[in-house]
Image (cartoon, rainbow, N blue to C red; front, side, top):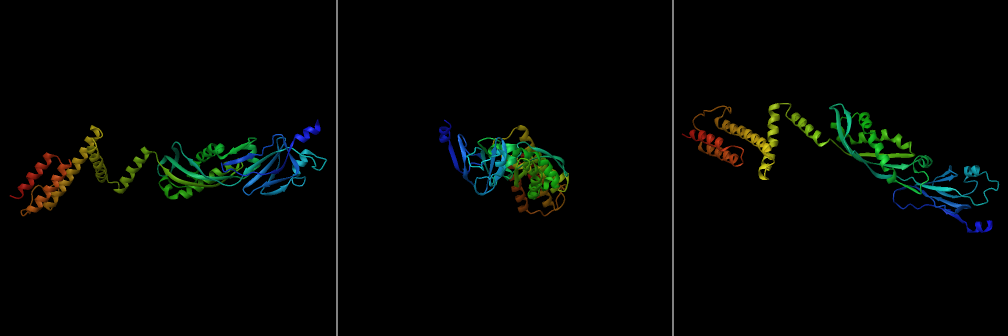
Amino acid sequence: MALMDFIKKQFIDILEWTESGDGTLAWRFPMTDREIQNGASLTVRESQMALFVNEGKVADVFGPGTYKLSTQTLPVLTYLKNWDKLFESPFKSDVYFFSTRQQIDQRWGTTQPVTIRDKDFGAVRLRAFGNYAFRVADPKLFHTEISGTRDSYTVLDVDGQLRGLMLQHISDAVASSGVAFLDLAANQIAFAKALMDAVAPSFTALGLKLESVTMQSVSLPEELQKILDQKIGMGMVGGDMGKFMQYQTAQAIPKFAEGGAGGGSGIAGDAMGLGAGVALGQVMAQQLSSGLHGGSPAATSAPAGVRPDEVMATLEKLAELKAKGIVTAEEFDAKKAELLKKLV
């Protein structure tokens, strides 16, 4: 009976793994009802490592190369088994292969804005995303901490954990980089390096090595971006409130024109746009009048000798403003009467 059992057993004489390219990090060689033949060949390719586990204990780790399994190549396993026949009989052990090549283009990004301290704004919420690359560096540690006895363990299985580690250290990375938010876009490399330095120890604790980190974009939530745009607008006019109001008015005119063409965006919005348009129209009319007078916009009397062609040109410009709704009919008629008097 014992002889029949021995004959039925399948003996393994070649152990190897050809990766399928599906992002597998750890793969267990099929061992069901099979034992490894004494003198079997173990092939570990470049970008791979192999791990032997006997009775739940890690015995030996093999790097790239071809090995003939014997007491010389498995000294730790031989010691654990305490064989007295110099490894002449077949043996049973779990064999795991690990891919040690870089797993590139792994994505990270903030699902919600992250609050950070900023030297310009005090505190700011930002969004950021980029990619990173990692590899299995310590198969024994990765086996005991992450992959375990599963038949296979893939990049997808560990993706959530690694992505969480990246996001967890964003605040630390910004603080250690010393780069203010307004300068982050121009210093993405410095930020990425600071993030890599902050996260790398957490990867190492899992038996992994973080090879690179890149940042592709950093931005504010929409509502904060609007406030920043206003702040930038104030900076462009040197903090002058009058100029800033002119800047805001100029921004409102196109939106009002679009609203009129497309049916409007509500009475309140139309009223605000109309107010801005009238204000701008009055300013332009005053400037036109000032040009004819040769003095300040407040001047109401003009010196003699105004040329008819200048008056007609001004009326044509006012007519265009009226057609666009920037100047009201009443304002146009009043200015028209004033200009025609200058021809008398």
